[in-house]
Image (cartoon, rainbow, N blue to C red; front, top):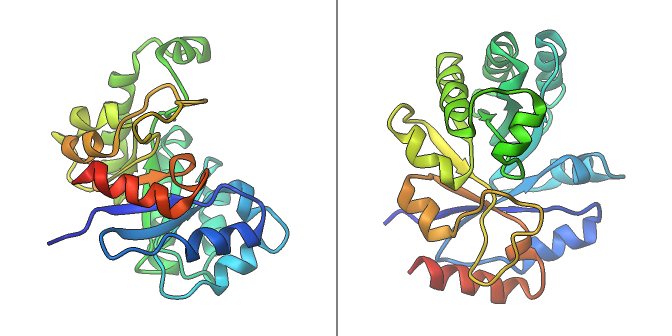
Length: 228
């Protein structure tokens, strides 16, 4: 039986905390990997620590969103890291998405490119303020089709968007904005429970605060219970 895939977001700038997260999140009931974002990657020793991690699934969430040439060479500069996933923003456009996918294949054939759609911290009101005239559902659908046409291996979207895109996209679907029962939404606007996200069609969940805040092993057990 395939285990539920969970990437724990190591949202910290301290190597000691990452070591604690990894050591305290071991379980045979989940397929656990680790996500590193800008905070840790840019921290002192962060990049070097990521390069030292062995035998773990690593998701590097840099949300690349620059011109195609710059974005492609940013991927090339990561060739010394043994990472499994990298993110690029759909909003960077077709040329950048294609350039990143092409360079990923050249740099590391095992590296999968995930296209980030609308962030889970953004609401329909926020979208209007940015200047979009379409709602989030319509935007995410268009972004997913773009990611698909550019050869991206997967997309990152809110759990509330998964059903909408599952019909048009058969790649990997990573879902952040996941909260365990009773946890605060905090800065997230579009959240889902772990079970809801998987039932809607997510292939992997990205979980930060609900896991790393408080007692990690206790939170892992809460997650397992909610998925059973």
